Image 1 (cartoon, rainbow over the protein chains, first blue to last red):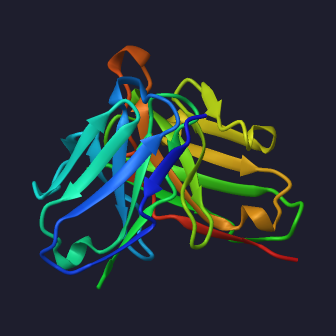
Image 2 (cartoon, chains in turn purple, blue):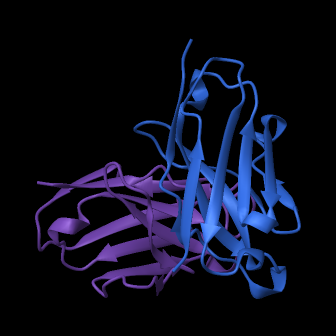
Length: 108
Length: 123
């Protein structure tokens, strides 16, 4: 099983700031099949990024993904009020499909 | 537009069996695998298992001994059965659309999700 470790656990930031979230895999993610999801309190996870760097439908270009192999990054260039949430990475290259433990982005 | 609507019992006693179902409206049911994912209160996401239209299943080894996922293609519906529940199974359970059913089409993330069902296991 591929274990995904996200860091940091929590980020306290202000609107307008740039944020970088990390996801590290215990082994190489096949074909960079790595996704990022956003989840707000009481809501269903929302797909942001797939295949490490492709934006899902309707996702603004201030949100981007990068990385390959075992190290992946989610970047939000300028935080908007609606971006404060928990972010999860997930690999779908090797079964069982696994998720990271999440990074919470909170308002400072 | 693809929509997943799920339903099932939300309160069980220890040792009972969880039964949830999810119906898919819109899109092509036969083209994908359909998954169940859960999230304990305040915690992260755990993939439970998946099924395609042919009934081919794939389970998370951590739950495999207690899980059965079934499909009814005539209704575009799939179901989860989790046996012998304990307090550790208390979670929100989601259904979701995942990878392509045909392996040569490549892999996909979970792009459409059901609304979630909260299961509480308590005596």
